Amino acid sequence: MVSFIHAADIHLDSPLLKLERYEGAPVEALRGASRKALDNLVALAVDRAVDFVLIAGDLYDGSWRDYNTGLFFASRMSRLGEANIPVFLIAGNHDAASRMTRSLRLPDNVHQFPVDRPDTVRLDDLGVAIHGQGFAVRAVKQNLAASYPPAVAGCLNIGLLHTGAMGGNYHAPYAPCTLDDLRSRGYDYWALGHVHERKVLCERPYVAFPGNIQGRHVRETGPRGCFHVVFDGVDPTVRFRALDTIRWEILQVDASGCEDGFAVLDRFQDLLLDRLAENGGLPLAVRVEIRGQSPAHGDLSARPGRWVNEIRLAGADVSGGRVWIEHVKMATSDPAGIDPRTADGPRGEILAFLEDLRTDPTGPLHPEGLLSDLIKKLPRELKEGEEGIRPDDPEWLAEMLDTVRPFLLQRLSARRPDS
Image 1 (spheres, one colour):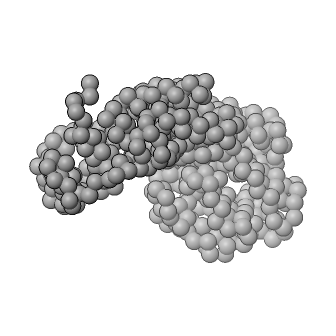
Image 2 (spheres, rainbow, N blue to C red; image 1 turned 30 degrees about the vertical axis):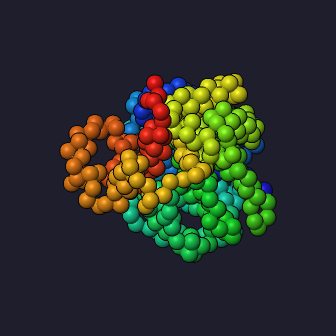
């Protein structure tokens, strides 16, 4: 029997930029989450007494701010060494971007594969051959898998590769390859890294991404961790093991049928309690989306700031401080609806203007439109990141117009301005 852990994309000490801009963000807890997740990986390996650990690239997150990042990793690998657990790793695109990574001396139980060619390490006592090659530069465009050696006869053969594989998601297509490329090597297991979502591409041979060990933002929701793999025969038993210490979630609240904002709050709290239970009480970073045609639409649209704060307070109340509300998106609509083709007066003018913004390629928000000079003068920090302003992105623009439309219509309908 052979037992090992397959992990990837640790991104140790990922900077998680601009967290300070988010109200109430648990900055230190989020920045320390990758270290705690690595601690959980080490504890799992020791507890399960695995034969070895595989790390399929992007151990780091580019250049370190100081040597403490590398020293922390080395100290955790030493703990595995004390338990007689060797570690085999390859450099990914983020590791290749760091000069300091190359100068760090790792403990004797850690083997790092070369970056100029594929290499094979044989564990004769286990009957295992591990093949791997790391990234020499950040953007590797060639198919590395095509140069991997054929399987070693009589051994359990494992390929360690950092790759975009067949592409997809928002990951760069580095070291692209196909399933046929991987199958042609004759290996029993391909331990892949780079794609942060957990994916099994094939089961015979087993080809899989474990995903990253700790979610870093709202695009990385749900449990994050590694695979614990046991070969006791022809096919492996592969179990996912969660390692994350803070979990990102998107909570979609259907406001249909809610008469007012307080009814929406009640529905939100019930859903949040369910989500906490599903995640075993783990601290959550949550994006809340309020959707649906609802009688509460007017109340929510007229005073969005008030209801965003009510949701934050309700989240803290029912979770005992275990939930941070990262963002609240109000996307409800009036059950009656308004047809922009027949609306007249101020409402009709507003609707027509918003529709022009959405559809006119030469409109005010176009790169050469009336607001182009203002857009160019916006500070860079307002254009970057998940919440950045992106008027040249049609999807972002449509979302912003959908957000402001009900608010403006409600203002026009109000008898007096809301204070």
